[in-house]
Amino acid sequence: VLAVSSVVCFAAVSAVSKIIERRAPKESLAVLTVYCGSEHVRLKALIDTGNSLRESFSGYPVCVAEKSAVERILPPAVSEYLNGTEPESSDLSFRLIVHSTVSGTGMMPAFRPDYAGIHTVSKTVRTDKIYIAVTENIIAKGEYEAILNPDLLSEEKEYAESI
Image 1 (tube, helix red, strand yellow):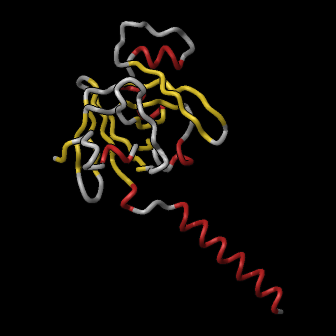
Image 2 (tube, helix red, strand yellow; image 1 turned 30 degrees about the vertical axis):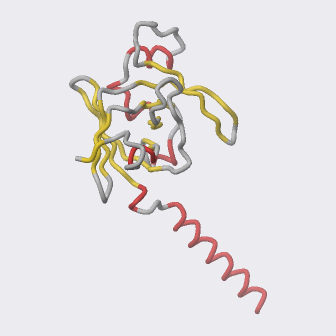
Image 3 (cartoon, helix red, strand yellow; image 1 turned 60 degrees about the vertical axis):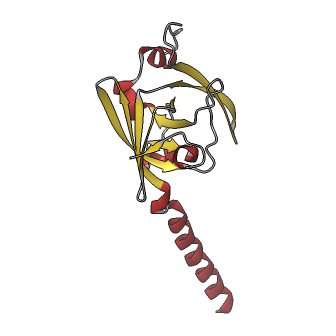
């Protein structure tokens, strides 16, 4: 009876722990609004302390967004790259971001929007010092559409201004 009870309790505690771990605390969630020209998209984003991506020339923080979520504001160069064709070199907002994950390294196309607004439970900021890297993968099983670099919300880094 003791052995069976121990196994059942272990299974119950493991199940509850997994459910709790899957849900991010409200402090790590944000709404990211990306503006390009007269268009904008609003994305549910996770503020991920593990995201330290930076654009190599400017040093600006990079956020990763699902292609399906930002498709209507994508610059032509990013769309061309994702479709397997050579993008025009005249688009100065287009960059390739080198990233490294557990599964290996790769490159993601990125663009610099006109500006972005980030709204969390404790503050709202606006920035034009940001790049949006585009992935065709689904982020966090569809729970979020973007992964934010936490430096955008850091007051010491001064990438964004509070509004």
